[in-house]
Image 1 (cartoon, rainbow, N blue to C red):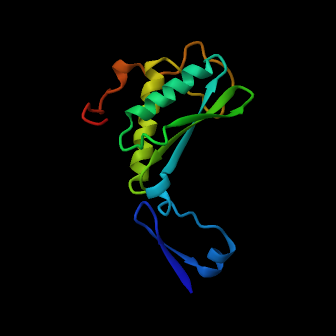
Image 2: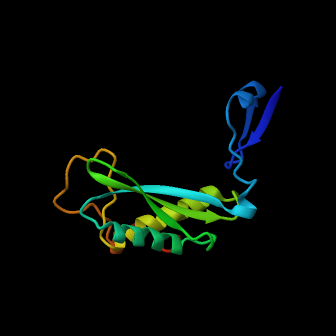
Length: 152
């Protein structure tokens, strides 16, 4: 006996029922209509950037992302105080699991754009030290070839 599942990438996954019975299954759609589904993403930002500024930038990125619920409102959690950076988690609610990959992609694009606009560097996982200049993409280079302005 097996269970057939369809992924968000329209792939069929066949899982033996013995595996289903021995592990947990995440149902993204069951409570989404009544309670919303929380999408989340994290960024690590150096201690030299005020947490209030980071929170405001993450909320601005959420505001720019379409198809999000206004209630419950987007919120930011400070997840950890690491050796070199603070890890922030942006949480937003959507009405359904449909289109999750696209929503995540749009949310990530908006986070990148907002942080670049305000000159704040998102730390890399292999952080070793501060570079002489922040690693940012200035707005005038956002549409360098072969990029075109039609994509948001």
